[in-house]
Amino acid sequence: MYVTFPYFRSRASFSLSFDAGPAKPAVPSSGGLKWNRSWGLEYCSDEWVLQWVQHGFPLFWSFLPSPAPPFFQQNIKKALACSDFVTSSIFDLLRANAIMKWHTQPKCVSPLYVVTISNGKQRLILDLRHVNQFLMVPSFCMDSLDLLTDLADLDDLMFFLDLASSYHQVDMDPRYYTYLGFKWKGELYFFRVLPFGLASAPWCFTKIIRTISLYLRFRGVQLLNYLDDFLVLVSDSQSTAHRQLVLDTFKSAGLAINESKSHLQFTRHLTHLGFVIDLDSGSLEVPLERWENLQQLITVAFSRQKVLVNLLSRIAGHLSSMILTTGPIALIKPRQCYSYLQKYSLQFYVAISDSLQDELTY
Image (spheres, rainbow, N blue to C red):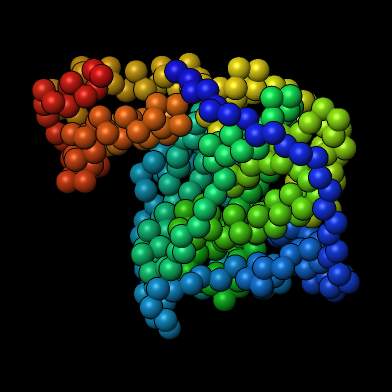
């Protein structure tokens, strides 16, 4: 399935001067953060980001001054089942100075668990649900592929970059280390960088990385940024200069690029954020692999009289992620499926009713 862009923007060439003013003094790095603080202090005008760059990211409590109460929970079974992976990941985090050992009991010791991401690789997550329920998480916007209709010209080229380490490039405020503790094989640790599992992490990371996006946009670079992914659109006449500007900017800011996941060659056809972008036809398509995964989940549901709500949640997640190509029908048609998600927990079993079967058949 695909959707054709309704129009392409006719982009006029322009130049924009940008005077950053005098450089501000650099703040010494604490060692775990790869972000170049001197670059951030020179080119960033967001006062909150400047504070985070200098002192680390704090936790914003919903009800000041009451923080999360003390908490301890054992690790989740899947983490124990993947013991070798967890041990290896902790070793890598220690070596990268992303975590440190804690010799006294932290206020919150949260469980570890392991998730399998879209490319089949495993990721270690700190289950911070206890801490998250006491956090204030502001709403914020991120770029999405529907902005392509405003950015792309018919003769544009594309390339994309993926940041290495992503969240772990951002230091935490040391005052809040005690809420980011975990235990493994009798040893206590805490995260000193932004951990996966913290509810406010996407907001923090987006605000910081937006500094890079604004810097590049001021210099005429057209890009879409979603967390640690950057899609850059360039005209043929500016392609080499803009690519070099982007690469130099990341290097100057101290942000490492994951070259194995990036595509630095110019192209008019690539897969990005789960969609195939084709500038020749002006279309977005869902890759065949994603359709096959959805069909496989539906087949599993049809093979059983009762299914876990968790399975329906995965099906609904696949459908909602395809809304750019399917349109609102992906949210409107599976009403029975969404009603189960609102009524029951993920570990609850529900019967495959006729109405639910009709929805999944559709």
